[in-house]
Length: 78
Image (cartoon, rainbow, N blue to C red; front, side, top):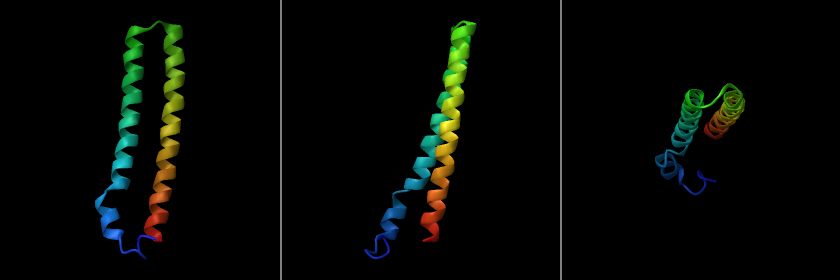
């Protein structure tokens, strides 16, 4: 669609792919920071819950990163 409408350069100037990857990296860093913060403040049981939550968040972020990279590759190939 971008090629037909001759909008490829304008879409590239948005840096959408780069900003999305940056957001995912930022989310991962926030998850790790949050886990470390809770490790210092909470007891063992609450820390284990937070650790499990952080692990699930990391897996979700990694899965989204892989899906997004595949989208980027498909978009570039087309």
